[in-house]
Image (cartoon, rainbow, N blue to C red):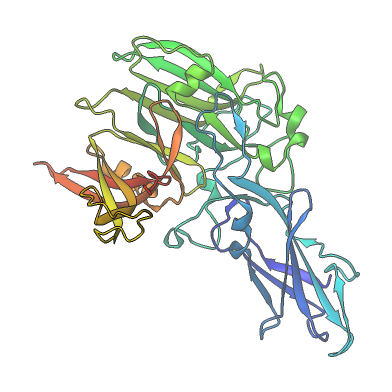
Length: 450
């Protein structure tokens, strides 16, 4: 084989990082030689072709993290879903193929080769057949190599047996959240096969169902309801993994689940009148086609809150480092300040444009006029005191490039985070708590006045 891949990214991975490939070729000394890489979608449609000369050591080094992120996003608008929903643009599957081109002399035309010695489009791929990327990013100081630590959020278990396991693989750092009745919320998971040599009937991250259990203030369980993952590759909850594993695609390898009180109501689930909190367990399928309560992909708790000191607070939804939504309520007072930029002109008291034979004395005629008023309304939201863990997790809000605020009717409006400040409180036992104050403004502000 002419082209060999010596280094390549793992799958699943995050697209907004360095996706480093290193390739070599036995033909590197040929005239006008260049490595060629094709970036294709999962349907083999060409997105971009990149050519590069070998470095002084005859290696070809590519960082496709500079190119692939343009094919991802915007973040899937799934806040108000009532059923499990496939990914559309928050993550995608790609095919990366390598080849080479060279001529017979320094002045000849060049021929494109498939990387295996024959003329044709690049055809040499990395050994793993699946290359699935989130529209996410990882702090380079948290990495030990070029690759996202997928083992922190992805693993495969036997989907054909009632196996016992316990993971916490939702693509969120929050295990417990405070939430109001009427709030929307979602939790996203890898699903099926996102790593390895193709779709597998015997190993998968088969997120089969979400089981919701409601509790009163005394911890007494009330209603229990289930939302099944029929977004794919399953279309019914009576199908086994072995029936559907060949129906996987990039759109089924990540699934968004409804998880907020209003999502449940929209799904036809009744909320108990004495509801104080509820839990959600995401589980595998048992051999009787029902949820396997011993095979847990993630468990989450939602505490129901009401207005704090009469303030409804502000609920943010923001794209997190995995490229999907996280949510947080700033429960204290919200204030707003309007800055008005005015532009003026001054006209004479005498009307030199008079059209008749008498220039009237007009005390209503303006001297100074505002012809343009630009209004910028800045809002401030305040959190209650936070634990160290929540304070650390919430920093994603300030780093995010995609932030929304939920309105009273459940609709989400885009906002821009201007800045944030932190108040630290130390009690007599030296237990530190933190409070965030966030200044933001709506991305579509009040119209300027003309």
